[in-house]
Image 1 (tube, helix red, strand yellow):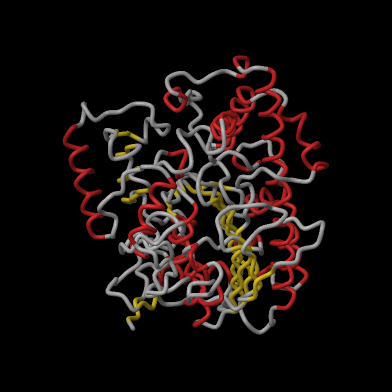
Image 2 (cartoon, rainbow, N blue to C red):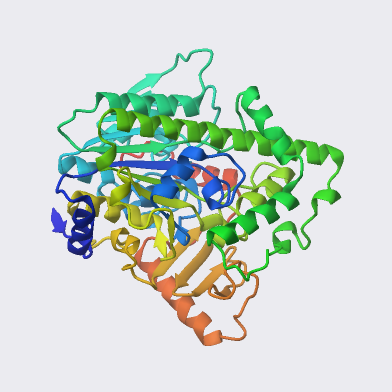
Length: 524
Protein backbone atom coordinates (compact mmCIF):
# COMPACT_ATOMS: atom_id res chain seq x y z
CA UNK A 1 0.00 0.00 0.00
CA UNK A 2 1.25 3.44 -0.88
CA UNK A 3 0.58 6.55 1.14
CA UNK A 4 0.59 9.74 -0.87
CA UNK A 5 0.12 13.10 0.82
CA UNK A 6 -1.73 15.51 -1.44
CA UNK A 7 0.51 18.30 -2.65
CA UNK A 8 -1.98 20.97 -1.59
CA UNK A 9 -2.81 19.31 1.72
CA UNK A 10 -0.70 21.37 4.08
CA UNK A 11 -1.77 24.71 2.65
CA UNK A 12 -5.39 23.62 2.37
CA UNK A 13 -5.61 22.34 5.94
CA UNK A 14 -4.03 25.52 7.21
CA UNK A 15 -6.61 27.59 5.38
CA UNK A 16 -9.42 25.38 6.62
CA UNK A 17 -8.28 25.48 10.25
CA UNK A 18 -7.75 29.22 10.10
CA UNK A 19 -11.36 29.64 9.07
CA UNK A 20 -12.76 27.04 11.42
CA UNK A 21 -10.80 28.06 14.47
CA UNK A 22 -10.64 24.41 15.54
CA UNK A 23 -9.03 21.11 14.64
CA UNK A 24 -12.24 19.05 14.63
CA UNK A 25 -12.71 17.13 11.42
CA UNK A 26 -15.69 18.64 9.59
CA UNK A 27 -18.73 16.67 8.55
CA UNK A 28 -19.19 16.59 4.78
CA UNK A 29 -22.54 16.43 2.98
CA UNK A 30 -22.00 15.88 -0.75
CA UNK A 31 -25.16 16.36 -2.84
CA UNK A 32 -25.25 15.29 -6.48
CA UNK A 33 -28.24 15.75 -8.79
CA UNK A 34 -28.74 14.11 -12.17
CA UNK A 35 -28.97 15.61 -15.70
CA UNK A 36 -29.61 19.15 -14.44
CA UNK A 37 -28.40 21.99 -16.63
CA UNK A 38 -26.06 24.84 -15.74
CA UNK A 39 -28.76 27.51 -15.50
CA UNK A 40 -31.75 25.73 -13.92
CA UNK A 41 -31.46 26.64 -10.24
CA UNK A 42 -32.17 30.16 -9.03
CA UNK A 43 -28.63 31.02 -7.94
CA UNK A 44 -27.36 30.21 -11.46
CA UNK A 45 -30.01 32.29 -13.23
CA UNK A 46 -32.97 29.92 -13.44
CA UNK A 47 -36.63 30.50 -12.65
CA UNK A 48 -36.88 27.07 -10.97
CA UNK A 49 -37.65 27.84 -7.33
CA UNK A 50 -34.77 26.46 -5.26
CA UNK A 51 -34.66 28.49 -2.02
CA UNK A 52 -32.69 25.90 -0.06
CA UNK A 53 -29.95 25.45 -2.67
CA UNK A 54 -29.89 29.23 -3.15
CA UNK A 55 -29.48 29.68 0.60
CA UNK A 56 -26.40 27.46 0.57
CA UNK A 57 -25.03 29.52 -2.32
CA UNK A 58 -25.65 32.83 -0.54
CA UNK A 59 -23.79 31.58 2.54
CA UNK A 60 -20.91 30.09 0.58
CA UNK A 61 -19.25 30.14 -2.83
CA UNK A 62 -20.47 29.29 -6.33
CA UNK A 63 -17.99 28.12 -8.94
CA UNK A 64 -18.53 29.44 -12.46
CA UNK A 65 -15.99 27.19 -14.26
CA UNK A 66 -16.65 23.78 -12.75
CA UNK A 67 -16.55 20.85 -15.19
CA UNK A 68 -17.82 17.27 -15.09
CA UNK A 69 -17.15 14.17 -17.22
CA UNK A 70 -20.18 14.64 -19.48
CA UNK A 71 -22.37 11.71 -18.39
CA UNK A 72 -23.60 9.87 -15.33
CA UNK A 73 -21.29 6.85 -14.88
CA UNK A 74 -18.06 8.62 -15.86
CA UNK A 75 -18.81 11.62 -13.64
CA UNK A 76 -19.72 9.45 -10.66
CA UNK A 77 -16.58 7.37 -11.08
CA UNK A 78 -14.43 10.51 -11.18
CA UNK A 79 -16.29 11.98 -8.21
CA UNK A 80 -15.95 8.98 -5.94
CA UNK A 81 -12.37 7.93 -6.85
CA UNK A 82 -10.72 11.26 -7.69
CA UNK A 83 -9.37 9.72 -10.90
CA UNK A 84 -10.27 10.22 -14.53
CA UNK A 85 -13.00 7.70 -15.25
CA UNK A 86 -11.09 5.55 -17.74
CA UNK A 87 -8.33 4.97 -15.21
CA UNK A 88 -10.79 3.20 -12.91
CA UNK A 89 -12.67 1.20 -15.56
CA UNK A 90 -15.65 3.49 -16.19
CA UNK A 91 -14.84 4.90 -19.62
CA UNK A 92 -18.36 4.19 -20.89
CA UNK A 93 -21.38 2.92 -18.96
CA UNK A 94 -22.42 0.18 -16.52
CA UNK A 95 -24.47 -1.41 -19.31
CA UNK A 96 -21.73 -3.89 -20.27
CA UNK A 97 -18.30 -5.13 -19.23
CA UNK A 98 -16.15 -4.79 -22.36
CA UNK A 99 -13.22 -6.57 -20.68
CA UNK A 100 -10.94 -3.69 -21.64
CA UNK A 101 -9.09 -1.91 -18.77
CA UNK A 102 -10.83 1.42 -19.26
CA UNK A 103 -14.26 -0.03 -19.99
CA UNK A 104 -15.17 -2.63 -17.34
CA UNK A 105 -18.55 -1.11 -16.47
CA UNK A 106 -17.70 -0.59 -12.79
CA UNK A 107 -14.97 1.03 -10.74
CA UNK A 108 -11.75 -0.91 -10.27
CA UNK A 109 -11.31 -2.29 -6.76
CA UNK A 110 -7.65 -1.22 -6.75
CA UNK A 111 -8.67 2.42 -6.52
CA UNK A 112 -10.03 3.63 -3.18
CA UNK A 113 -13.27 5.58 -2.93
CA UNK A 114 -13.86 8.71 -0.88
CA UNK A 115 -15.86 6.59 1.54
CA UNK A 116 -13.06 4.06 2.01
CA UNK A 117 -10.47 6.74 2.66
CA UNK A 118 -12.61 8.80 5.02
CA UNK A 119 -13.77 5.68 6.85
CA UNK A 120 -10.14 4.77 7.52
CA UNK A 121 -9.75 8.29 8.91
CA UNK A 122 -12.49 7.83 11.48
CA UNK A 123 -15.56 8.95 9.55
CA UNK A 124 -18.95 7.27 9.54
CA UNK A 125 -19.93 7.04 5.90
CA UNK A 126 -23.42 6.98 4.42
CA UNK A 127 -24.90 7.04 0.95
CA UNK A 128 -28.40 7.39 -0.36
CA UNK A 129 -29.65 7.46 -3.96
CA UNK A 130 -28.25 6.60 -7.37
CA UNK A 131 -25.07 4.48 -7.40
CA UNK A 132 -24.57 3.61 -11.11
CA UNK A 133 -21.06 2.23 -10.58
CA UNK A 134 -21.72 -1.53 -10.69
CA UNK A 135 -21.93 -3.44 -13.97
CA UNK A 136 -25.54 -4.37 -14.71
CA UNK A 137 -24.74 -8.08 -14.87
CA UNK A 138 -24.20 -7.96 -11.10
CA UNK A 139 -27.40 -6.17 -10.08
CA UNK A 140 -28.88 -9.32 -8.54
CA UNK A 141 -25.81 -10.60 -6.71
CA UNK A 142 -23.22 -8.48 -4.87
CA UNK A 143 -19.80 -8.75 -6.49
CA UNK A 144 -17.72 -6.51 -4.27
CA UNK A 145 -18.70 -3.27 -5.98
CA UNK A 146 -21.91 -2.33 -4.14
CA UNK A 147 -21.78 0.86 -2.01
CA UNK A 148 -21.44 -0.96 1.34
CA UNK A 149 -18.67 -3.02 -0.25
CA UNK A 150 -16.85 0.17 -1.30
CA UNK A 151 -16.61 1.96 2.02
CA UNK A 152 -20.11 3.08 2.96
CA UNK A 153 -21.39 2.00 6.37
CA UNK A 154 -24.99 2.36 5.21
CA UNK A 155 -26.69 2.63 1.84
CA UNK A 156 -30.23 3.08 0.57
CA UNK A 157 -30.91 3.52 -3.11
CA UNK A 158 -30.96 2.10 -6.61
CA UNK A 159 -27.95 0.61 -8.38
CA UNK A 160 -29.07 1.42 -11.91
CA UNK A 161 -28.88 4.68 -13.81
CA UNK A 162 -32.53 5.12 -14.75
CA UNK A 163 -36.11 4.04 -14.26
CA UNK A 164 -39.35 4.88 -12.52
CA UNK A 165 -39.56 7.30 -9.60
CA UNK A 166 -42.50 5.29 -8.25
CA UNK A 167 -41.01 1.80 -8.60
CA UNK A 168 -37.22 2.08 -8.89
CA UNK A 169 -35.28 -1.17 -9.29
CA UNK A 170 -32.99 -2.73 -8.22
CA UNK A 171 -33.49 -0.97 -4.90
CA UNK A 172 -31.24 -1.89 -1.99
CA UNK A 173 -31.07 -1.26 1.73
CA UNK A 174 -27.39 -2.06 2.35
CA UNK A 175 -27.17 -5.52 0.70
CA UNK A 176 -30.84 -6.38 1.14
CA UNK A 177 -33.05 -6.11 -1.95
CA UNK A 178 -36.15 -3.96 -1.39
CA UNK A 179 -39.18 -5.18 -3.34
CA UNK A 180 -42.22 -3.92 -1.41
CA UNK A 181 -42.97 -0.20 -1.64
CA UNK A 182 -45.86 1.88 -0.22
CA UNK A 183 -48.50 3.22 -2.58
CA UNK A 184 -47.33 6.83 -2.10
CA UNK A 185 -43.65 6.04 -2.74
CA UNK A 186 -41.62 8.66 -4.62
CA UNK A 187 -37.91 8.08 -5.08
CA UNK A 188 -36.74 11.65 -4.45
CA UNK A 189 -38.60 11.76 -1.15
CA UNK A 190 -37.27 8.34 -0.16
CA UNK A 191 -33.69 9.50 -0.83
CA UNK A 192 -34.26 12.50 1.43
CA UNK A 193 -35.93 10.42 4.15
CA UNK A 194 -33.07 7.91 4.23
CA UNK A 195 -30.49 10.71 4.38
CA UNK A 196 -32.32 12.31 7.31
CA UNK A 197 -32.53 8.92 9.03
CA UNK A 198 -28.78 8.39 8.68
CA UNK A 199 -28.14 11.86 10.15
CA UNK A 200 -30.47 11.26 13.08
CA UNK A 201 -28.78 7.95 13.94
CA UNK A 202 -25.23 9.20 13.44
CA UNK A 203 -23.04 8.89 16.58
CA UNK A 204 -22.11 12.29 17.93
CA UNK A 205 -18.49 11.40 18.67
CA UNK A 206 -17.50 10.77 15.04
CA UNK A 207 -17.34 12.92 11.91
CA UNK A 208 -19.87 12.16 9.17
CA UNK A 209 -19.56 11.80 5.40
CA UNK A 210 -22.95 11.72 3.69
CA UNK A 211 -23.25 11.30 -0.08
CA UNK A 212 -26.75 12.14 -1.33
CA UNK A 213 -27.13 11.17 -5.00
CA UNK A 214 -30.52 12.37 -6.17
CA UNK A 215 -31.95 10.85 -9.34
CA UNK A 216 -33.87 14.05 -10.15
CA UNK A 217 -34.36 15.52 -12.67
CA UNK A 218 -33.27 12.56 -14.86
CA UNK A 219 -35.80 11.18 -17.33
CA UNK A 220 -38.54 9.86 -17.05
CA UNK A 221 -40.21 13.13 -16.12
CA UNK A 222 -42.41 12.17 -13.19
CA UNK A 223 -43.73 14.32 -10.35
CA UNK A 224 -46.94 14.57 -8.32
CA UNK A 225 -49.61 16.40 -10.28
CA UNK A 226 -50.13 19.11 -7.66
CA UNK A 227 -46.45 20.07 -7.90
CA UNK A 228 -46.52 20.16 -11.69
CA UNK A 229 -49.57 22.44 -11.72
CA UNK A 230 -47.73 25.00 -9.60
CA UNK A 231 -45.11 25.35 -12.34
CA UNK A 232 -47.26 25.35 -15.50
CA UNK A 233 -47.95 29.09 -15.77
CA UNK A 234 -44.27 29.85 -15.36
CA UNK A 235 -43.40 28.04 -18.60
CA UNK A 236 -46.31 29.16 -20.79
CA UNK A 237 -44.18 32.08 -22.12
CA UNK A 238 -41.92 29.61 -23.93
CA UNK A 239 -38.22 28.82 -24.05
CA UNK A 240 -37.10 31.91 -26.00
CA UNK A 241 -38.29 34.38 -23.35
CA UNK A 242 -37.06 32.22 -20.49
CA UNK A 243 -33.63 31.75 -22.06
CA UNK A 244 -33.22 35.51 -22.45
CA UNK A 245 -34.33 36.07 -18.87
CA UNK A 246 -31.88 33.48 -17.56
CA UNK A 247 -29.03 35.03 -19.50
CA UNK A 248 -29.76 38.49 -18.13
CA UNK A 249 -29.84 37.16 -14.57
CA UNK A 250 -26.54 35.38 -15.19
CA UNK A 251 -25.06 38.72 -16.23
CA UNK A 252 -26.37 40.34 -13.04
CA UNK A 253 -24.91 37.53 -10.94
CA UNK A 254 -21.58 37.68 -12.75
CA UNK A 255 -21.69 34.15 -14.13
CA UNK A 256 -21.25 35.45 -17.68
CA UNK A 257 -19.52 38.62 -18.94
CA UNK A 258 -21.78 41.65 -18.95
CA UNK A 259 -20.82 42.58 -22.53
CA UNK A 260 -21.68 39.15 -24.00
CA UNK A 261 -24.67 38.56 -26.26
CA UNK A 262 -26.89 35.52 -25.87
CA UNK A 263 -25.59 32.91 -28.35
CA UNK A 264 -27.91 31.01 -30.68
CA UNK A 265 -26.72 27.44 -31.15
CA UNK A 266 -28.10 26.71 -34.61
CA UNK A 267 -25.74 23.77 -35.22
CA UNK A 268 -27.36 21.79 -32.41
CA UNK A 269 -30.63 21.88 -34.36
CA UNK A 270 -29.26 20.79 -37.71
CA UNK A 271 -28.58 24.26 -39.03
CA UNK A 272 -31.27 26.55 -37.63
CA UNK A 273 -32.72 26.67 -34.15
CA UNK A 274 -36.54 27.00 -34.27
CA UNK A 275 -38.17 29.81 -32.35
CA UNK A 276 -41.02 29.29 -29.87
CA UNK A 277 -43.43 30.70 -32.44
CA UNK A 278 -42.29 28.09 -34.99
CA UNK A 279 -43.70 25.26 -32.90
CA UNK A 280 -47.22 23.96 -33.30
CA UNK A 281 -49.77 24.47 -30.52
CA UNK A 282 -49.42 20.81 -29.64
CA UNK A 283 -45.63 21.07 -29.40
CA UNK A 284 -45.82 24.19 -27.25
CA UNK A 285 -48.30 22.50 -24.91
CA UNK A 286 -46.12 19.40 -24.66
CA UNK A 287 -42.97 21.41 -23.94
CA UNK A 288 -44.74 23.50 -21.29
CA UNK A 289 -45.99 20.38 -19.55
CA UNK A 290 -42.62 18.63 -19.67
CA UNK A 291 -40.68 21.67 -18.49
CA UNK A 292 -43.11 22.20 -15.62
CA UNK A 293 -42.64 18.57 -14.59
CA UNK A 294 -38.87 18.92 -14.84
CA UNK A 295 -38.99 22.04 -12.65
CA UNK A 296 -41.25 20.32 -10.12
CA UNK A 297 -38.75 17.46 -9.84
CA UNK A 298 -35.95 19.90 -9.00
CA UNK A 299 -38.14 21.77 -6.54
CA UNK A 300 -39.03 18.55 -4.69
CA UNK A 301 -35.31 17.80 -4.49
CA UNK A 302 -34.72 21.30 -3.14
CA UNK A 303 -37.34 20.66 -0.45
CA UNK A 304 -35.38 17.56 0.48
CA UNK A 305 -32.11 19.48 0.71
CA UNK A 306 -33.84 21.82 3.12
CA UNK A 307 -34.84 18.81 5.24
CA UNK A 308 -31.26 17.54 5.23
CA UNK A 309 -29.87 20.89 6.35
CA UNK A 310 -32.55 21.05 9.05
CA UNK A 311 -31.64 17.57 10.30
CA UNK A 312 -27.94 18.49 10.47
CA UNK A 313 -28.84 21.62 12.43
CA UNK A 314 -31.14 19.79 14.86
CA UNK A 315 -28.37 17.23 15.42
CA UNK A 316 -26.14 20.10 16.53
CA UNK A 317 -23.65 19.54 13.70
CA UNK A 318 -24.38 22.48 11.41
CA UNK A 319 -21.49 24.71 12.47
CA UNK A 320 -18.97 22.00 11.63
CA UNK A 321 -20.52 20.70 8.40
CA UNK A 322 -19.47 21.42 4.83
CA UNK A 323 -22.08 21.16 2.06
CA UNK A 324 -21.19 20.62 -1.60
CA UNK A 325 -23.78 20.62 -4.37
CA UNK A 326 -23.33 19.82 -8.07
CA UNK A 327 -24.83 18.04 -11.10
CA UNK A 328 -23.28 15.02 -12.83
CA UNK A 329 -23.57 16.49 -16.35
CA UNK A 330 -25.49 18.99 -18.43
CA UNK A 331 -29.15 18.66 -19.40
CA UNK A 332 -30.18 15.87 -21.76
CA UNK A 333 -31.83 15.94 -25.18
CA UNK A 334 -32.31 12.16 -25.25
CA UNK A 335 -36.05 11.61 -25.14
CA UNK A 336 -37.64 13.35 -28.12
CA UNK A 337 -37.95 16.60 -30.06
CA UNK A 338 -39.12 18.78 -27.17
CA UNK A 339 -36.20 17.62 -25.00
CA UNK A 340 -33.86 19.53 -27.34
CA UNK A 341 -35.62 22.78 -26.43
CA UNK A 342 -35.60 21.90 -22.74
CA UNK A 343 -31.88 21.11 -22.78
CA UNK A 344 -31.12 24.26 -24.79
CA UNK A 345 -32.83 26.30 -22.07
CA UNK A 346 -31.36 24.35 -19.15
CA UNK A 347 -27.78 24.67 -20.43
CA UNK A 348 -28.03 28.43 -21.09
CA UNK A 349 -25.76 29.89 -22.39
CA UNK A 350 -23.68 26.88 -23.38
CA UNK A 351 -23.56 24.73 -26.48
CA UNK A 352 -24.71 21.11 -26.72
CA UNK A 353 -25.89 18.61 -24.12
CA UNK A 354 -25.15 15.60 -21.94
CA UNK A 355 -22.94 12.98 -23.70
CA UNK A 356 -20.84 15.52 -25.61
CA UNK A 357 -17.73 17.31 -24.42
CA UNK A 358 -18.89 20.77 -25.42
CA UNK A 359 -19.59 23.26 -22.64
CA UNK A 360 -23.27 22.37 -22.36
CA UNK A 361 -22.46 18.75 -21.62
CA UNK A 362 -19.63 19.30 -19.14
CA UNK A 363 -20.54 22.51 -17.24
CA UNK A 364 -22.19 22.19 -13.86
CA UNK A 365 -23.13 24.35 -10.90
CA UNK A 366 -20.88 23.73 -7.92
CA UNK A 367 -21.61 25.22 -4.51
CA UNK A 368 -19.32 24.96 -1.48
CA UNK A 369 -20.66 26.11 1.88
CA UNK A 370 -19.77 25.81 5.55
CA UNK A 371 -22.82 25.44 7.78
CA UNK A 372 -21.34 28.13 10.01
CA UNK A 373 -21.51 31.28 7.88
CA UNK A 374 -18.53 32.77 9.72
CA UNK A 375 -16.28 30.08 8.23
CA UNK A 376 -17.15 31.04 4.67
CA UNK A 377 -14.93 33.45 2.78
CA UNK A 378 -16.89 36.34 1.24
CA UNK A 379 -20.31 34.61 1.37
CA UNK A 380 -22.42 34.75 -1.77
CA UNK A 381 -19.50 35.28 -4.10
CA UNK A 382 -18.28 33.51 -7.22
CA UNK A 383 -15.06 31.60 -7.78
CA UNK A 384 -13.91 31.80 -11.40
CA UNK A 385 -11.01 29.39 -11.00
CA UNK A 386 -11.14 26.29 -13.22
CA UNK A 387 -12.33 23.20 -11.35
CA UNK A 388 -13.30 19.64 -12.21
CA UNK A 389 -15.22 16.78 -10.67
CA UNK A 390 -11.89 14.98 -10.03
CA UNK A 391 -11.23 17.75 -7.47
CA UNK A 392 -13.96 16.58 -5.08
CA UNK A 393 -11.88 13.70 -3.68
CA UNK A 394 -8.79 15.81 -2.86
CA UNK A 395 -11.03 18.52 -1.42
CA UNK A 396 -12.67 16.02 0.94
CA UNK A 397 -9.29 14.64 1.99
CA UNK A 398 -8.01 18.17 2.49
CA UNK A 399 -10.93 18.97 4.77
CA UNK A 400 -10.40 15.78 6.76
CA UNK A 401 -6.62 16.10 6.96
CA UNK A 402 -6.35 12.66 5.38
CA UNK A 403 -4.07 10.79 3.02
CA UNK A 404 -4.58 9.12 -0.32
CA UNK A 405 -3.82 5.42 0.08
CA UNK A 406 -3.72 3.33 -3.10
CA UNK A 407 -2.68 -0.16 -4.18
CA UNK A 408 -1.88 1.08 -7.69
CA UNK A 409 1.22 2.60 -9.20
CA UNK A 410 -0.52 5.95 -9.51
CA UNK A 411 1.57 8.27 -7.35
CA UNK A 412 -0.87 11.15 -7.13
CA UNK A 413 -4.41 12.27 -7.73
CA UNK A 414 -4.93 14.21 -10.98
CA UNK A 415 -7.20 16.73 -9.26
CA UNK A 416 -6.48 19.41 -6.66
CA UNK A 417 -8.07 20.55 -3.44
CA UNK A 418 -10.43 23.47 -4.00
CA UNK A 419 -9.87 24.99 -0.56
CA UNK A 420 -7.09 27.31 -1.77
CA UNK A 421 -9.29 28.38 -4.70
CA UNK A 422 -11.91 29.56 -2.21
CA UNK A 423 -9.32 32.09 -1.06
CA UNK A 424 -8.33 33.03 -4.59
CA UNK A 425 -5.12 31.02 -4.31
CA UNK A 426 -5.95 28.16 -6.66
CA UNK A 427 -4.28 27.51 -9.98
CA UNK A 428 -5.52 30.15 -12.49
CA UNK A 429 -4.69 27.86 -15.42
CA UNK A 430 -5.02 24.08 -15.61
CA UNK A 431 -5.11 21.35 -18.22
CA UNK A 432 -8.22 19.17 -18.06
CA UNK A 433 -9.16 16.19 -20.25
CA UNK A 434 -12.47 14.77 -21.48
CA UNK A 435 -13.77 11.80 -23.50
CA UNK A 436 -17.11 10.05 -23.81
CA UNK A 437 -18.32 7.92 -26.74
CA UNK A 438 -15.41 9.36 -28.78
CA UNK A 439 -16.44 12.94 -28.09
CA UNK A 440 -13.14 14.39 -26.91
CA UNK A 441 -11.80 17.62 -25.46
CA UNK A 442 -8.87 19.22 -23.71
CA UNK A 443 -8.93 22.55 -21.89
CA UNK A 444 -5.52 24.14 -21.34
CA UNK A 445 -5.73 27.61 -19.89
CA UNK A 446 -8.15 29.54 -22.09
CA UNK A 447 -7.70 27.22 -25.06
CA UNK A 448 -10.02 24.31 -25.74
CA UNK A 449 -9.82 21.63 -28.41
CA UNK A 450 -13.04 19.66 -28.85
CA UNK A 451 -14.81 17.35 -31.29
CA UNK A 452 -18.24 15.74 -31.33
CA UNK A 453 -16.79 12.29 -32.13
CA UNK A 454 -13.70 10.85 -33.80
CA UNK A 455 -15.32 11.11 -37.23
CA UNK A 456 -15.76 14.87 -36.80
CA UNK A 457 -13.02 17.48 -37.07
CA UNK A 458 -11.39 19.04 -34.03
CA UNK A 459 -12.50 22.59 -33.20
CA UNK A 460 -10.11 25.04 -31.55
CA UNK A 461 -11.86 27.46 -29.20
CA UNK A 462 -10.61 30.57 -27.41
CA UNK A 463 -12.68 30.33 -24.21
CA UNK A 464 -11.62 33.75 -22.98
CA UNK A 465 -13.33 35.51 -25.87
CA UNK A 466 -15.69 32.72 -27.00
CA UNK A 467 -16.91 30.78 -23.94
CA UNK A 468 -19.92 29.53 -25.94
CA UNK A 469 -17.84 27.71 -28.57
CA UNK A 470 -19.19 29.56 -31.59
CA UNK A 471 -15.99 30.03 -33.65
CA UNK A 472 -13.49 27.37 -34.70
CA UNK A 473 -9.98 28.87 -34.85
CA UNK A 474 -8.21 25.74 -36.12
CA UNK A 475 -7.21 27.28 -39.45
CA UNK A 476 -5.97 30.46 -37.77
CA UNK A 477 -3.84 28.71 -35.14
CA UNK A 478 -2.82 25.31 -36.59
CA UNK A 479 0.20 24.96 -34.28
CA UNK A 480 -1.94 25.40 -31.17
CA UNK A 481 -4.38 22.83 -32.51
CA UNK A 482 -1.53 20.37 -33.13
CA UNK A 483 -0.07 20.99 -29.66
CA UNK A 484 -3.36 20.33 -27.87
CA UNK A 485 -4.21 17.31 -30.00
CA UNK A 486 -0.85 15.75 -29.14
CA UNK A 487 -1.40 16.44 -25.44
CA UNK A 488 -4.84 14.86 -25.58
CA UNK A 489 -3.51 11.70 -27.24
CA UNK A 490 -0.66 11.49 -24.74
CA UNK A 491 -3.22 11.57 -21.93
CA UNK A 492 -5.46 9.06 -23.72
CA UNK A 493 -2.55 6.63 -24.19
CA UNK A 494 -1.71 6.68 -20.48
CA UNK A 495 -5.25 6.62 -19.03
CA UNK A 496 -6.88 3.55 -20.66
CA UNK A 497 -8.87 5.69 -23.10
CA UNK A 498 -7.70 4.09 -26.35
CA UNK A 499 -8.74 2.54 -28.62
CA UNK A 500 -11.85 4.65 -29.01
CA UNK A 501 -15.08 2.86 -29.76
CA UNK A 502 -17.08 4.18 -32.69
CA UNK A 503 -20.51 5.36 -31.54
CA UNK A 504 -22.50 2.62 -33.30
CA UNK A 505 -25.50 2.94 -31.01
CA UNK A 506 -26.39 1.78 -27.52
CA UNK A 507 -27.77 -1.71 -28.25
CA UNK A 508 -25.21 -2.53 -30.92
CA UNK A 509 -22.32 -1.83 -28.56
CA UNK A 510 -23.85 -3.79 -25.68
CA UNK A 511 -24.76 -6.80 -27.81
CA UNK A 512 -21.32 -6.88 -29.41
CA UNK A 513 -19.47 -7.12 -26.11
CA UNK A 514 -21.96 -9.45 -24.48
CA UNK A 515 -21.46 -11.85 -27.38
CA UNK A 516 -17.69 -11.64 -26.97
CA UNK A 517 -17.79 -11.90 -23.16
CA UNK A 518 -20.83 -13.79 -21.81
CA UNK A 519 -19.55 -13.43 -18.24
CA UNK A 520 -20.95 -10.08 -17.16
CA UNK A 521 -20.66 -10.61 -13.39
CA UNK A 522 -17.81 -8.12 -13.03
CA UNK A 523 -16.01 -10.48 -10.65
CA UNK A 524 -12.74 -10.95 -12.53
